[in-house]
Image (cartoon, rainbow, N blue to C red; front, side):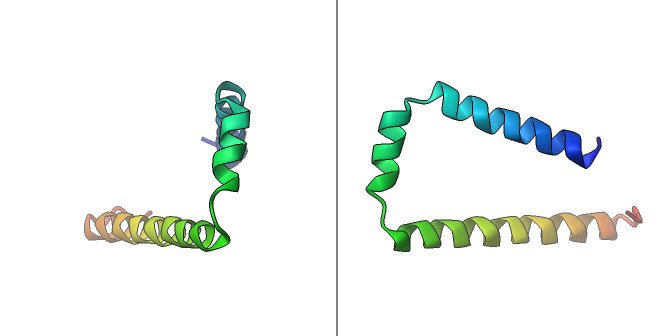
Length: 67
């Protein structure tokens, strides 16, 4: 699948998510979080994805898939 198609699907699902969710409650809940919590969650998110990428590459290379 082409990268722009993946990006379009992700953007569409993200937009649908915010269309379906009660925006007032979401905004209120986000406003209650401190900047420290935002940074911690984002850092954990990036680290988790990095671990997943490393694991995927390890298994693909172990199978000698040559991707």
